Image (cartoon, rainbow, N blue to C red; front, side, top):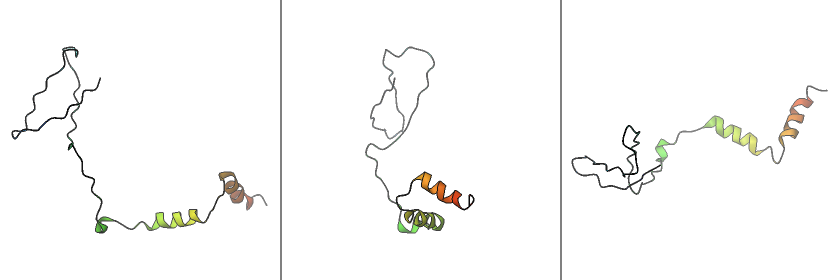
Length: 83
Protein backbone atom coordinates (compact mmCIF):
# COMPACT_ATOMS: atom_id res chain seq x y z
CA UNK A 1 0.00 0.00 0.00
CA UNK A 2 1.24 3.47 -0.85
CA UNK A 3 -0.07 6.58 0.84
CA UNK A 4 0.75 9.92 -0.74
CA UNK A 5 -0.19 13.29 0.66
CA UNK A 6 0.85 16.86 -0.13
CA UNK A 7 1.64 18.77 3.05
CA UNK A 8 2.73 22.25 4.09
CA UNK A 9 6.10 22.29 5.85
CA UNK A 10 5.74 24.54 8.90
CA UNK A 11 8.41 27.03 10.01
CA UNK A 12 9.61 24.64 12.74
CA UNK A 13 10.02 21.88 10.10
CA UNK A 14 8.09 19.34 12.22
CA UNK A 15 5.45 17.12 10.66
CA UNK A 16 2.85 15.05 12.49
CA UNK A 17 1.85 11.85 10.70
CA UNK A 18 -1.59 10.32 11.16
CA UNK A 19 -1.73 6.72 10.01
CA UNK A 20 -5.04 5.38 8.63
CA UNK A 21 -6.77 2.87 10.94
CA UNK A 22 -6.57 0.08 8.33
CA UNK A 23 -2.79 -0.02 8.81
CA UNK A 24 -2.07 -2.58 11.55
CA UNK A 25 -0.20 -1.47 14.66
CA UNK A 26 3.43 -2.59 14.98
CA UNK A 27 6.66 -2.01 13.12
CA UNK A 28 6.54 -0.54 9.65
CA UNK A 29 8.90 0.98 7.13
CA UNK A 30 8.20 4.61 6.31
CA UNK A 31 9.72 6.18 3.18
CA UNK A 32 9.97 9.97 3.11
CA UNK A 33 10.90 11.73 -0.12
CA UNK A 34 10.84 15.51 0.17
CA UNK A 35 10.27 17.13 -3.20
CA UNK A 36 8.85 20.49 -4.28
CA UNK A 37 5.22 20.41 -5.36
CA UNK A 38 6.07 21.87 -8.78
CA UNK A 39 9.69 20.95 -9.52
CA UNK A 40 11.61 23.28 -11.81
CA UNK A 41 13.80 21.61 -14.39
CA UNK A 42 17.19 23.29 -14.61
CA UNK A 43 19.18 23.04 -17.82
CA UNK A 44 22.97 23.00 -17.47
CA UNK A 45 24.71 26.20 -18.43
CA UNK A 46 26.90 26.18 -21.54
CA UNK A 47 29.96 26.45 -19.31
CA UNK A 48 28.98 23.17 -17.58
CA UNK A 49 28.88 21.19 -20.84
CA UNK A 50 32.05 19.19 -21.29
CA UNK A 51 33.34 18.06 -24.69
CA UNK A 52 32.98 14.36 -25.51
CA UNK A 53 35.47 13.72 -28.31
CA UNK A 54 35.43 9.91 -28.08
CA UNK A 55 31.64 9.72 -28.17
CA UNK A 56 31.51 12.25 -31.00
CA UNK A 57 34.02 10.23 -33.01
CA UNK A 58 32.12 6.97 -32.47
CA UNK A 59 28.84 8.62 -33.42
CA UNK A 60 30.48 9.89 -36.59
CA UNK A 61 31.59 6.36 -37.49
CA UNK A 62 28.14 4.95 -36.75
CA UNK A 63 26.44 7.60 -38.87
CA UNK A 64 28.44 6.48 -41.92
CA UNK A 65 27.40 2.83 -41.49
CA UNK A 66 24.02 3.50 -43.09
CA UNK A 67 21.30 0.87 -42.99
CA UNK A 68 23.40 -2.22 -42.36
CA UNK A 69 22.28 -5.13 -40.20
CA UNK A 70 24.31 -6.79 -37.47
CA UNK A 71 24.70 -9.91 -39.64
CA UNK A 72 26.12 -7.81 -42.49
CA UNK A 73 28.53 -6.09 -40.07
CA UNK A 74 29.63 -9.46 -38.70
CA UNK A 75 30.10 -10.91 -42.19
CA UNK A 76 32.13 -7.89 -43.30
CA UNK A 77 34.32 -8.09 -40.21
CA UNK A 78 34.92 -11.83 -40.61
CA UNK A 79 35.53 -11.65 -44.37
CA UNK A 80 39.14 -10.54 -43.91
CA UNK A 81 39.84 -13.64 -41.80
CA UNK A 82 38.03 -16.17 -44.00
CA UNK A 83 39.87 -15.40 -47.27
